[in-house]
Image (cartoon, rainbow, N blue to C red):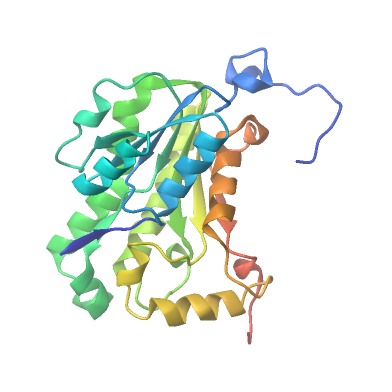
Length: 272
């Protein structure tokens, strides 16, 4: 059994946008009419589909992938360009893509039974499969998409607090997300000369089709919300808004970063 884990201060001075190979700030990252690809959605409450919906509302054209056929049929019925993709198997969805101004990477996979048993019981096979699906896939798919990425494009990978702190029940996925975040920094360096930005978006603990299979998720999400600066959990729409910003010209100078959308949880230590 495996599950897909979904997880402006303005100035009047002239901005230097030479790194985007463009005379206009609007050509840096996605704006209305541009295409973005959202990889790895798993349900209507997944973060990826919320990001796609926000993009569509802003006039950006999202192309959405999933490995769940019935979900793809529902997305198609709602007017989305929905395509089947199941890394490392069927990647035909990438064959005839239009030029892209952005990519949102939500793909991850692990054996939930082993996840529940803890890191010490993880098998070599599941470790390898989890890192392949949750981290290496980001490298491989970015490489395949590279010819389709326009100058000024933005690539965003979804991550979670469990990459840098212990979140009970998250186990091996924390290791995978830590690897993913380092991969983001490295690809930001390698693609920066082409005007392509790469960032990670660390989402708070929100209910998704994937998070619900985590052992103790409800209790963990309540504890994280209580311990944040805002004393509440974040909403899907807040995460989607941050992703839209990372895809937009407003974040054109940001790359190689992990942006946290968790109510300020990482700013607090000590008793909660």
